[in-house]
Length: 458
Image (cartoon, rainbow, N blue to C red; front, side, top):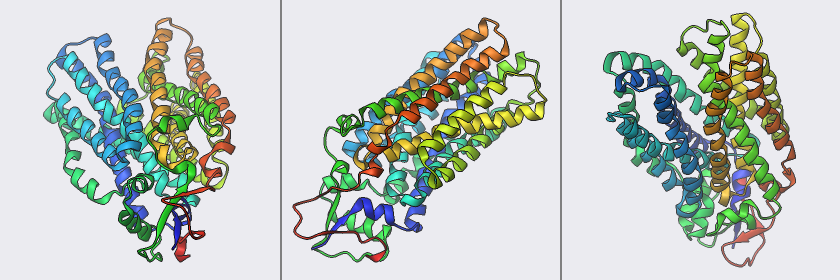
């Protein structure tokens, strides 16, 4: 009888077609997610004119999705560890596709805000689930690279929204960009067919045949036997109380540090997205079209995410992430000083790399920190708490803008969270990371033979 350690199997696997398929579907889902989140900003001027709403009502319409994302990340991140991550992902895709499309039928700010709140549940809920899924199935040597590459689809979605949005709105009205967001619903049957289920969930529900199929795809050299028994490390085994594991095994302090780091990073991301253009305009800069700004910010985010992931696989991910927070503090502070427009765009790109890009690398680190069985829960709670920073940022920075403070002080207020986030990351106890504790296999049933790994045909 062979006892096969699923965690080690996934860690030691070589990248193959199966990994590419998981990467493709997770990245595509994040592209849709990024489009749905960005599309309101692209269409907002047209919506305000059409519905005859002022900036205050428009702010409510935008922030309603952020509230939905906060609850979605916590609830749908946690429930995934109970119903299976594949179904949780499909539920999220359905939510953000249906209700973003439904927002196109809205005739007033209240109904629009309600649709955006419901869409936000899916937008927020899908993030921790796809990050956890990609983390689970990625080979250890390239895990951070694959997770950040996947999550750079978020920036791709923003770029698509910026490029398509202008032409669609001019030709067919603002509703068209929302109707287009309903198309991913057509892919749900393919997602269910192609995306594998989480291995700890399959183990907990006794679906051994499905595990054998996945094992043979992770390692083409594996030949399933009727007597094979699968196992995961004790802390990776799924149970019905995933939240307690965020604070168990000495992870409590680090969990709080992740929450602080996420709060600070998302504060920066949404402070920039809400007020950067206004701040630069008030300082006398000519930024050109909003489309150019969106492209520079998102291209910077993609470069920062992918480069950060690449560095994290070659150096210690904790210190790479801390360095990215430090870069955010520097680039945001420099944006407060008068300089040539080309230099400004370089700094905007660096700001995208070190805020949005930093958040993507933080997602990857958090996914690696928690055991397989509670990764969605850990990421969901971190993103949920972090969303409160996203909600607070436009309000707080808006208040400062209204006080007519010098430009440097406004950007200093956005940069200070980067320093706090860096300190929080440095305080994470990496010794409590799941990647440091993969011993202690907990099999399906008592072992009668030594555990083995079949990675690479072993």
